[in-house]
Length: 441
Ligand SMILES: [Zn+2]
Ligand SMILES: [Zn+2]
Image (cartoon, rainbow, N blue to C red; front, side, top):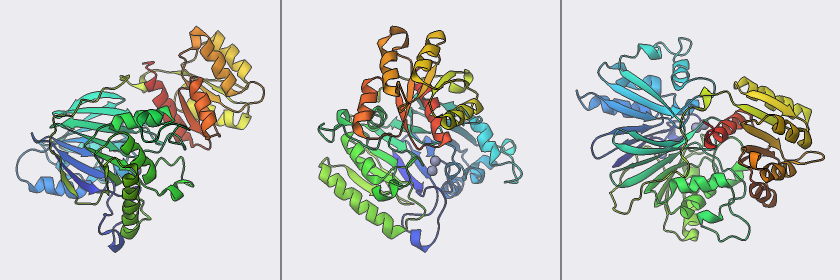
């Protein structure tokens, strides 16, 4: 299997002398299997040169599988320039999560509206098919491909591709679920010792991979002021990959503000950290033109998803109960969820929430941790004590990122956390992931 990096930059293309080595094009990675299947991760500006090279290869029809992690602009902006799509007889199968406000097709068509681009999506002569994904195991080309949600303000999936006896995992864009990676007192460097269920799942998804390509836009110092933007710092990536027994990790989605010198420095620090972990993890910062050939190994075990989820979250109208004693926050959340077509009810105290749940069971509860009187944790305990509400999904809103409260929440059975301050798209993406994950479909 062959992997080539065509775009390694995050957020916006940054060509110029300062980025000559690591590259200025936005996200795009090519993967070719031994039998010739072409998989393209993301369609940032890097796809333009890949497209030119495919076209230069001759008269054979080009059949591309395009795997979009999400539809933020830096991951799709190269698609209108994907020249094989302008040739009849070629085909493109486009995979990605359903957009938050429209289908995958609609989102791609949006950036090609006449206001922005001279050719409309539906005018492209190649045969284009759209496949919306949630979590699960799929067959793409001849490869086995697992998808799992990432933690990003837009609906985002990570891809684990297994073919030719190797596993490659593409995890762009993603941010840690929790500030603290490890449980206090637990042995460092083991998946079991990871504090947050989301980070633990993330580690399992990349476990034992030959190559992981991971968002590492920031340094830990920068990350402190960029929380909720949906990107990782290299120290999280190295530690989680080491715990997961990953063989090689490519740090990518380099910040547009980082020149070659800066990225090289990140690479040095990340390597030092990997050495300290003592796992033999090979770390490098992805650069444009980097080409890797991965040799098959007999020890590859197919990834097994603990609970695979099917179907579309958008096809059902879910009922969500929002519980918060602060009127402004309550109104903001309710409005955002209603805009996303959910049926939303609200409660201003823990007791009122319990009474409402007894009368009418929602599909999901969005619960504030800190409330006057009965707090979120007490509500949780009361829900989990009753058989009817034992499995009711609860998304907890908390400003407290310290370990004891996170652990207390999980011990009480919280499904997931959103840490304040959060953005509305981040909350709604988390709500969707929570609903998809809890198999209400
Ligand atoms: Zn991005
Ligand atoms: Zn993004």
